Length: 250
Length: 163
Image (cartoon, rainbow over all chains, first blue to last red; front, top):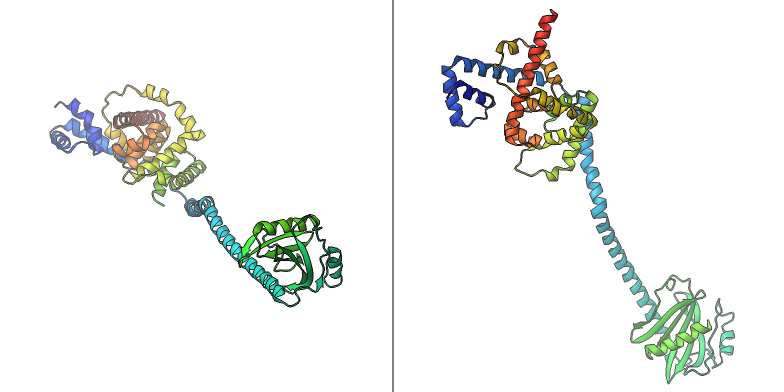
């Protein structure tokens, strides 16, 4: 191979990029060719001088520490960013679901406690020899009877035209709070209506709506600062009918 | 931090400015860290991080300015005729002279020489860093070396005239 052809490969040779066989062949050529050897030497010198000249700038320690600080802070910031994006909603959902479970659990327990107490009151009153202290079918008699006995007043519905009959009323207590206990009758079934001020810890913000508790149907709602409970062993639709009458009157 | 000193040196050569070089290195590490997921295992880490630095530089204002005149420079320095390397010329050239010549080179010649000689990258690594084909690495390296020799000769002749 002529020198001209070899010279085209000298750069690759000094850069160590020639294939082994070719490199060996070129090395052989260089041992016998002064001109090419001088050329190769010049290129090696050039490489060395560029290498030396090129290693020129050293970063100061301050830059190193600044960048180290920024990139060791970055992942944390980055991960906290991811944390917010990914983990936060997940965490929120977890916290919320736990909170909801707790709340629902507590709420259910509270309702159960209240309802079973009301059911007890209802049963106890009916089992008593004197279920009511004021015996009257007249709401205008029953309502004033409570005056001075309980710290609030309420309205009772006109029952004319309905199947319900008012039997009477008594003072009762729920969670140390006095209230009115009215007993209505529907086709031989007694239904208790409890009215309390809606500020007792037990009854305050109690979930409302019908509930089937302890084989009794219970309806409860809040109206004008009063908490109404309707408890009875009649069907839910009868409980709802009486509730509607009470709501309309209240 | 891997390759810190080398990256700073390279950045400083590209930007020719201390503050810009510092910013560039910082930007490189930040981007590298952020984009580490895009780094594929088995590929060349060095080429990857140099590529980040170089791309950041090229998109900077200084980088854009430096590359505008490139086509003209390459055209001016072509065709690359085979010249006998002046061993004596190189030998005599002081470190400062070579540094000045390197600084005077168009950025594309400067960077490829630095990657090849200072970083001692293989042609393959250079190809990955500059995102150019292997053949282009070889031809550009050849032109860069010739351009450097020409500059050194000019400076040497200029110096002799001056004396």
